[in-house]
Amino acid sequence: MSTPGVASGIELPALVAKIHLDVATSVVPADIESITDAIGHAAPWLSEGESSEVVRRVLGRVGGLGEIEGLLHDDDVTDVLIDGPGEVVVERHGRLTPAGLVLDADGVSTLVEQLARIGNRRVDSRHPMADLSLPGGFRVNIAVAPVAVGGPFVSIRRFRTAVSDLTEVAGRSAGLIAEAVADRRNVLVSGATGAGKTTLLGAMVDRCGSFERLVVVEDVAELPASRHLVRLEAQPGDGEGRPATSIRELLRSALRMRPDRLVIGEVRGAEAVDLVHALGTGHRGSMATIHADGPASAMRRLELLCAAHETTDAALVRDQLRDVVDLVVHLERTPTGSRLVTAIGEVGAKGLRAVQGEVGQW
Image (cartoon, rainbow, N blue to C red; front, top):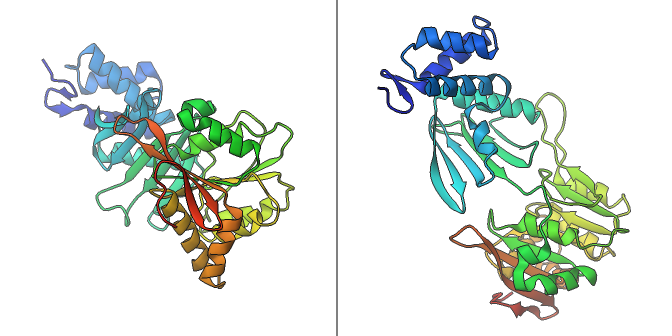
């Protein structure tokens, strides 16, 4: 009897790669019956279950996202991590665990090609990194040689497409945050990767007045919303004459679109300067996220980003930030995978004042 994933000494990934190559080169027609017959000739000792698994994986490579397609249909999976050929790892309920799936080099390369095609991105040695989004609510990062040593590396994160209720996301802090949105205060949401910043931002956006015009600027469009939004998404250059469109360029364009509020998916570069200027010219009630480990860290990072791209005196930058940012809401991810608002700081002339939790000194 063959062990799971192995057929009489032949690993199933190798068999999948062989049959897929035959289908790709038209040696075998791309239909279930023909693929099943080809598997029967190549490995007649396979059980019916193993044969069906090979068929599923081959069809996935031909017309979808290969063997990982089933993982993306599992609502408990929040991340799919592929670190080159070998075991695929997933996150379920906040914990990383083996997915019970092994990809060979051909399977990983095919997956990268399929993802790049779906996301309309070029991924090769001259363009070794790419960010893209997939239908159904997934954000993908790809890194290939020469930057990916031992890769390719593929990271797929599920983001919420349905808007969460503010109370569900923010817990006991929901009332305070809802009041800040209603009062049109400028809010900065901070946290580490995967802390739930975008989810909270979506819940806040859903609390804005239906008559308000919100212009959203994102690196990759992923903000969940149940209302109409004017959405702008950054684009990379293709290396063949099409220039990149940066967050900063989009933000400048957004200011010409008569926004009532600006929503910036993530502040991480020169766009910080334009955002601060925009907040100081009447776009009250705007929102943005930033990677940081606390409210004070978030303000320092925003200050450093502005200083790095602005010749203004550092003291003036800090004074301006104190004028335009009203509230910093910080999220953390618990060991169980849940997200929690751990601190809220109010920004004023004297710096940060703790409204909830410890906010640090700034």
